[in-house]
Length: 257
Image (tube, rainbow, N blue to C red):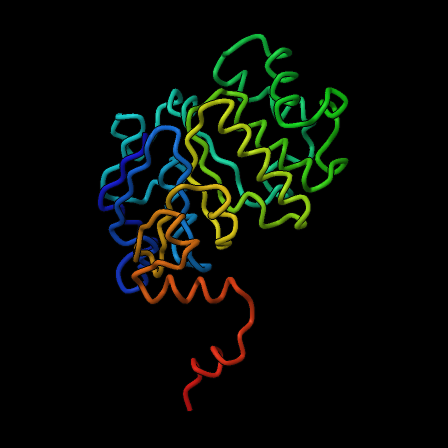
């Protein structure tokens, strides 16, 4: 479903250039949930933005559902590929009702039958029709993220790109959103690419994971190996150690005098 070869993303020019992504390769099968993990600044979100066409400053090869993609995407591309952003507070227009947020992509793509589509997608994400004419400030963080998922699904895509979809939410709400995303994937046959810094989220949501550091993929492995601690790269082992909580002995070992 997704094929990436030698993807490179650079911001700026000359001596000021920042190489955010450095020649990565990815293959994601149809129906798979694929994770990308790494610390902040490793290039994870930049990869997603290049895949979805929000960042045109890339080189390499990107193919979605077998179709080569260029820097500028046709409108039809977004019927098959949508993105859910990290911040449920910043990704929804504060002056639009939920109804307008969901009806806008329907109008842009001239799908018709907007009322049925909106009611159906709100039901699918666990929100009733009473939420249809509320504004974002009248919703909790978890409800806002459900609206963001509904907006991505209303065009009935086959691919969802998920950029830290639960990191801005309370722990209990995170579990609800992750369970929602798992259910939707199986019901709709979706393909996921999930970016996160949380290895527990990857272990719950994905079958395979790529580990990024400084814009490069340092390791790719099945999630079962990640759970078992069977990793080849020192950076991945460091991430695993950090995910297990504060370890005074390990921290003392990293210090240099």
